[in-house]
Amino acid sequence: MKVDLRNRNVIALKDFSEKEILYLIDEAARFKDLKAKRKPHKYLEGQNIILLFEQSSNRTRTSFEVAGFDLGLGVSLVDLRYNTLGTNESLEDAISVYDRYYDGIVYRGPDQKLLEYMIDLTDIPIYNALTDKFHPSQMIADMLTIREKFGRLEGLKLVYLGYTGDNMPSSLAITCAKLGINFVGCGPLEYAADKDVVSLSNMFSKNHHSDVIYTDNVKEAVKDADIIYTDMWIGLNEKDDVPVERIKKLYPFRVTQEIMDMTKEDSIFMHCLPAFHDKKSTLAQKVIEKLPSDMDLDGMEVADEVFRSEKSMVFDQTENRIGAVKAILYSTLRYE
Ligand code: CP
Image 1 (tube, rainbow, N blue to C red):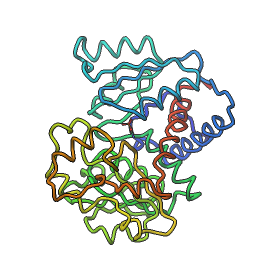
Image 2 (tube, protein in one colour):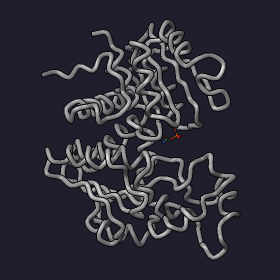
Image 3 (cartoon, rainbow, N blue to C red):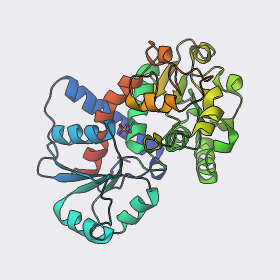
Image 4 (cartoon, rainbow, N blue to C red):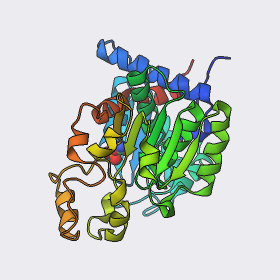
C-alpha cells in the first residue's frame, strides 16, 4: 500500500509506522538531491505555515524557514519567548486565528501535552519543532545521516551517552526501535527514560528482534558501537543557575577519544547541536566559571577533539535537517 501522510500531525514518530518513517527518510534524501542539483521544487506554492517558538532555536527555526521557502510556502515566525501562548489572548483563540490564516502550525515549547491539545483545536496539521518529550524532524535528519554513512539502518548499534531521560534520547530510543537499530542509553540510572518511553520502545523493537537497553556501564555499552550520540547536559535556560551536581554525575559519561577508541573502527559520532565542545561560546564561559576548579573541561558532554574529528557527523546532521523538514511538510501538505 502506498504511503499517504496528507493532513497528518507530526508530533512524535511513535505515531508513525516503520514504513511511513522510511518513506520520510527517502523523501528527505530526494529533496536533498533536488537541492544539490539546484532543481526548483516549489511544490507547495500558495500555502502558508506559522512557526510558534516559545524557546530559542538556531537549526530548527531556520531549517523550517529555508525548507518552507524552497517549497514555495509563505512562512511567518512568531517569537513567543517573552510572550507565551495564552498571555494576551487565550491559546484557543490564538489557534482559531491561525487556523483561518495558515495551512500548518509549527510549535517549539516545553510541553508535548500542549501540542496534543492543539490538535483538538484545529484541523490543520501541527508539527513538533521540539518539546520536552520528542524531536521528530531531528530524527528524520539523523536517520538519513546514518543511512548515508552505513547504507543501512537495521542491525546497527547506537549508544546514547549522558542524560538518558531527556527528549533526544527518548526520541532516539523510539525511532531506533521502530527501524531495527539496537539502542543503548548509558548514563546515571537515576536519569533513565520514563516508563512510557521504555515500554513503547521495547514493544516496537520486538518486530526486529533488536534491543533497547539502559545501563550505567560505559565500557560494556560502547563496545561494538556503530554510533555514539550525545547532547548537552544543561538547558539553555540554566546558564544563570548551573546544575553543578548534575554535571558532576554526568562527567563519567562524556564522549572522549578514549571512548571512541572502544567502538567499531568505522564508528561515527553524532550530536544534534548546540554542543558544548570548547570554551568559545559565552554560555560555555559562564558555565565553566561556576564549576569546581578541579573539573578539567575543555568541553562538556563531548571533547573538542572528538567533535572536530573525521568521525563527527554533526554538520551532516544539520544539513539533513532541511531535507527532513521538506519531507515532513511536503508529505503532509501536498494536495495530491
Ligand atoms: N538540534 C536543534 O534542535 O537545534 P536548535 O535548538 O538550534 O533548533
